[in-house]
Length: 98
Image (cartoon, rainbow, N blue to C red; front, side, top):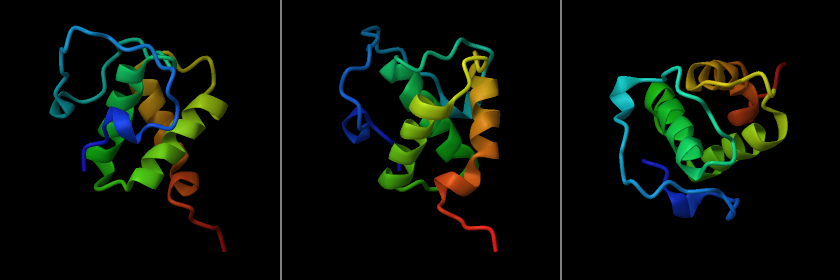
Protein backbone atom coordinates (compact mmCIF):
# COMPACT_ATOMS: atom_id res chain seq x y z
CA UNK A 1 0.00 0.00 0.00
CA UNK A 2 1.40 3.37 -0.91
CA UNK A 3 1.26 5.76 2.03
CA UNK A 4 -0.25 9.11 1.09
CA UNK A 5 -0.50 12.59 2.55
CA UNK A 6 -3.89 11.82 4.12
CA UNK A 7 -2.32 9.01 6.20
CA UNK A 8 0.17 11.27 8.01
CA UNK A 9 -0.58 12.36 11.57
CA UNK A 10 1.04 15.79 11.42
CA UNK A 11 -0.77 18.39 9.36
CA UNK A 12 1.76 21.23 9.24
CA UNK A 13 4.43 19.82 6.93
CA UNK A 14 5.92 21.95 4.18
CA UNK A 15 4.91 20.61 0.77
CA UNK A 16 6.67 20.97 -2.57
CA UNK A 17 4.32 21.90 -5.40
CA UNK A 18 6.42 20.73 -8.35
CA UNK A 19 4.63 17.33 -8.54
CA UNK A 20 7.96 15.61 -9.24
CA UNK A 21 7.73 11.99 -8.14
CA UNK A 22 10.82 9.96 -7.34
CA UNK A 23 10.50 6.31 -8.23
CA UNK A 24 10.86 4.05 -5.20
CA UNK A 25 12.80 1.55 -7.28
CA UNK A 26 15.56 4.15 -7.56
CA UNK A 27 16.19 3.59 -3.86
CA UNK A 28 17.44 5.91 -1.16
CA UNK A 29 19.80 8.66 -2.24
CA UNK A 30 22.21 11.05 -0.59
CA UNK A 31 19.56 13.70 -1.11
CA UNK A 32 19.03 15.83 2.00
CA UNK A 33 16.29 14.58 4.31
CA UNK A 34 14.11 17.26 5.88
CA UNK A 35 11.87 16.00 8.71
CA UNK A 36 9.62 19.04 8.26
CA UNK A 37 8.93 18.30 4.59
CA UNK A 38 5.85 16.20 3.90
CA UNK A 39 7.36 15.10 0.59
CA UNK A 40 10.50 13.81 2.33
CA UNK A 41 8.44 12.08 5.03
CA UNK A 42 6.26 10.27 2.50
CA UNK A 43 9.28 9.34 0.40
CA UNK A 44 11.18 7.76 3.29
CA UNK A 45 8.13 5.90 4.63
CA UNK A 46 7.32 4.55 1.17
CA UNK A 47 10.97 3.59 0.59
CA UNK A 48 10.94 1.64 3.84
CA UNK A 49 7.68 0.00 2.78
CA UNK A 50 9.22 -0.87 -0.60
CA UNK A 51 12.17 -2.62 1.07
CA UNK A 52 10.37 -4.54 3.82
CA UNK A 53 6.95 -5.26 2.34
CA UNK A 54 3.47 -4.06 3.16
CA UNK A 55 3.27 -1.51 5.95
CA UNK A 56 -0.02 -0.86 7.64
CA UNK A 57 -1.15 2.74 8.08
CA UNK A 58 -0.53 2.37 11.84
CA UNK A 59 3.07 1.24 11.21
CA UNK A 60 3.62 4.12 8.78
CA UNK A 61 2.34 6.52 11.43
CA UNK A 62 4.65 4.91 14.00
CA UNK A 63 7.56 5.58 11.60
CA UNK A 64 6.44 9.19 11.26
CA UNK A 65 6.40 9.60 15.06
CA UNK A 66 9.79 7.91 15.47
CA UNK A 67 11.33 10.22 12.89
CA UNK A 68 9.83 13.32 14.49
CA UNK A 69 10.77 12.39 18.06
CA UNK A 70 13.90 10.23 17.90
CA UNK A 71 15.76 10.70 14.62
CA UNK A 72 19.24 12.03 15.44
CA UNK A 73 20.01 15.42 13.94
CA UNK A 74 23.09 13.87 12.31
CA UNK A 75 20.83 11.88 9.96
CA UNK A 76 21.02 14.16 6.95
CA UNK A 77 20.31 11.95 3.92
CA UNK A 78 17.68 9.43 2.83
CA UNK A 79 20.34 6.72 3.08
CA UNK A 80 21.15 7.45 6.73
CA UNK A 81 17.46 7.80 7.69
CA UNK A 82 16.61 4.50 6.01
CA UNK A 83 19.51 2.81 7.80
CA UNK A 84 18.30 4.26 11.12
CA UNK A 85 14.78 2.97 10.44
CA UNK A 86 16.12 -0.52 9.78
CA UNK A 87 17.70 -0.41 13.24
CA UNK A 88 14.31 0.63 14.71
CA UNK A 89 12.41 -2.29 13.16
CA UNK A 90 11.41 -3.79 16.50
CA UNK A 91 9.75 -0.54 17.57
CA UNK A 92 7.98 -0.16 14.26
CA UNK A 93 6.57 -3.66 14.28
CA UNK A 94 5.92 -3.79 18.03
CA UNK A 95 8.14 -6.82 18.54
CA UNK A 96 9.11 -7.62 22.09
CA UNK A 97 12.42 -9.24 22.90
CA UNK A 98 11.89 -12.42 24.90
